[in-house]
Image (cartoon, rainbow, N blue to C red):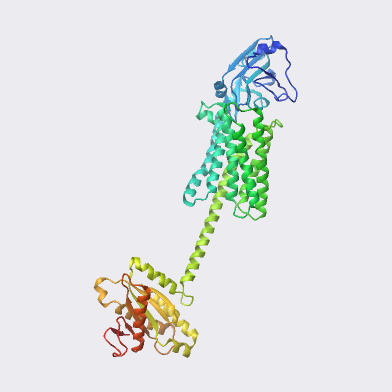
Length: 552
């Protein structure tokens, strides 16, 4: 009824009777919303035949309202009046942040037909929409709509809260900080929907309209601020320029600073503060729109979720800002669109968060695979694909702590140079591969340390077998090696044999000392005729098969 109502300001002690007797004209021009208060009077024509049957109520934005009065002027000049305290106004809430105050006399048909004008007194109005959005509506209709609308808003809140569950789960496991900012955004969305829709009065009936208004404004400001930080951390690194990151941070925090500066509970609030508040959102809207296009041009994949989720919200928000600054009246039904887009944005960004987590996990797993592959390449002999000297030395060092190996054996292929010279390096390499594969199949730690030399870190044996160990175990291994080479490299006519030097590994022995001992005993095996295992120190001048040696 914005085109039909008129306004007038007065002092707080002016009654409706005094106002009418004064004869002061009501302002029906385009400037009628520029009221100064502290008490604002609204004159509303009452056309009974055009209104729905039953009790009629006055509705409007209830943000920040305190005491109010509703007066019905009958055709004979009689006034029917009802005064409402701030608590009464809050109790007469309607879904989507409106008040609904019954017009006195409309509950009686004989009086309803005689009503000509409704006068509404609003004390200390905080927002112009408490006047500009005034309408006369059916009380019965809105009573019937309260439950389904409350259920709808509760369902929207529930849908928005659900992503918080997996946010908490995944953040506990992965610690991605953009999930925290997404959770703050969800909390702000739920708080705004819960408060502005009127659900807050169902769960907390004693809530004042000033508190509700501040919750509305603060939740939007915090949600937008969190959205800026979410944008910076959600989009892939390098997709938003440094200067633009600074601009996003500054504009996202502007509504928070303005809200803290102008919206106060101690009476410092003025109707102009609402204009400052709504205007503070415009810079971040334009900056975010530009940033989304900027990130898209730089090849961001994650930004598509924000484009899908934020573009409808920004479009609805432009309308909400324009109406909040009283640039035009607009259609209050657009607020329903804002509620739905806020919840839709929460769901879309929840999918985006899940997608981003999946991509980050895939990237993390790819990096881990590369690290494992690099480690394997660094620790693997390229020809035989068994452990190399680097891996062997690291394994020996770890044995100083857990002592899993009792002996170190160096195995050398006898007359390997003759094999290369007679059959070629291709056959020689094949022999090395067979030896490497066979040694790797043993329960011991096998490595190739250079040329035709291999090492074994031999597992601890049980106490009852330790006396014959390691000679028997190595004899079996050498026998397997001889048969494997003979079977898999048939080009070699003669038997390929092996010489082995063995040293025990004491608890504090260094790799250098153990290797020197094993190498010295390998030298003894070579100079005592090869094809044998030596595990004690012997002289080369002794017989070819002295005590402490074994031939294969």
